[in-house]
Length: 126
Image 1 (cartoon, rainbow, N blue to C red):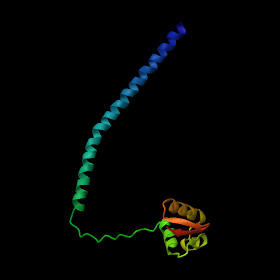
Image 2 (tube, rainbow, N blue to C red; image 1 turned 90 degrees about the vertical axis):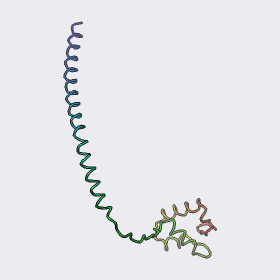
Image 3 (cartoon, rainbow, N blue to C red; image 1 turned 180 degrees about the vertical axis):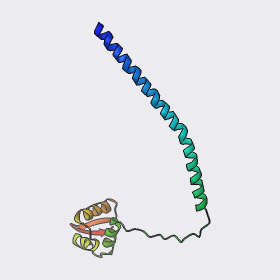
Image 4 (tube, one colour; image 1 turned 30 degrees about the vertical axis):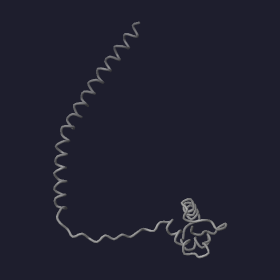
């Protein structure tokens, strides 16, 4: 019974120490929370000043709409241009893709209904 009482006293002391540490940390957090709004206000003012500088009227540059060619676009383009269908060898040579990329592109195009396999290894547009 005495051992338990001694252990309880030790735990009680440790809990007291921990609660003091928690109070210190809470005070530090409160200090930082008060300091941050002032820093945020300064940041907001700086951002507003930058926007004001950027808001000066400028001449609009003509927009260039260049469509980037994707892997699927390049494969589909080769298949469309081939009159009697494009073979895998032709597709490899004209697109420069590795076999894995080419296989994935052909699969995606066929599932989307853009191309059809005319025979084994020969693809035509749908």
